Image 1 (tube, protein in one colour):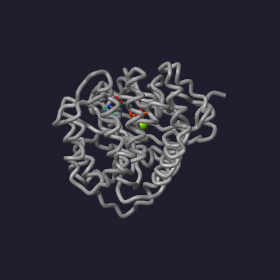
Image 2 (tube, protein in one colour):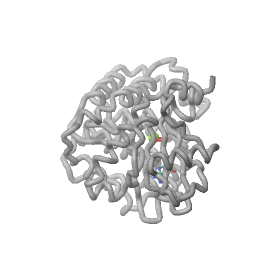
Image 3 (cartoon, helix red, strand yellow):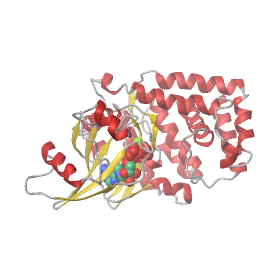
Image 4 (cartoon, protein in one colour):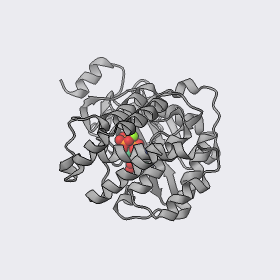
Length: 337
Ligand SMILES: Nc1ncnc2c1ncn2[C@@H]1O[C@H](COP(=O)(O)OP(=O)(O)OP(=O)(O)O)[C@@H](O)[C@H]1O
Ligand SMILES: [Mg+2]
């Protein structure tokens, strides 16, 4: 049985989003009310690069919009199960920030949620590139970073009275495993030398460092606890788009109420991984005008650097072994500080 057949058998009422059957898609959109009676579906095509979900740009006779379906697996690796409720949590995030102007202004508008099929309909921000170009030599401009930090401060200060709806436990458990556990497990099956010859020895050295491993374990426990602030949860260049209108933020599927230091740490880690200028990196803590435990922030940054270099979720980095060793030394320094 294919994954699609399995899906339809287990969820007979849910629509399975597919670009190759436009008639079925058009009838689905009409039935949802996402296509006006005088509007025609013209095209459906892959919206951009993504791993977890199935995301299409829908072109109609009047406009375009985005459909994003979460399936109970990782779209790029269908044999790997993934928490199906992630789309619903992501939808709740968009709903919750819709009346928060600073946050909503930098995000696509939510058009609707199909809670049965786990599909979000979102405003199309245009065929924009994300910021993973930073790993290839692009430099973030100060004004863009300032916007990204302002957005984060506004998000972290958001007060919501239904925090339980954002527990996102299954996604957190998945992330916890990939961020805090697997990269530091000896014999985890990852062939790091195939990525960068000599990287395996760097991994072994950290895996054998009991103090480091213990601190990472404690940070992982903190990640699993509920915290004070609404976090994006995946605040890295792949979640930022460079549109004609400016910087935009997407993909809050890993959101939860946790320590704001986690989001800020992830942001800092990626500025280091992308070898951004020192003064630019310093701008983050300078402009984050809200209370923050800076030491904890750097510890989370250290974990993110470590997991991106030694874990499964590799980045398109152009770093040689000495540079990776330098970054891992920074991770160790911050985490053991
Ligand atoms: N609202 C939008 N407007 C324009 N493009 C979008 C929009 N939403 C998504 N995209 C495009 O689709 C790509 C994938 O979207 P998204 O990151 O939300 O999917 P994902 O499956 O969660 O990805 P990942 O596995 O990397 O987390 C984006 O990088 C972007 O190119
Ligand atoms: Mg995603």
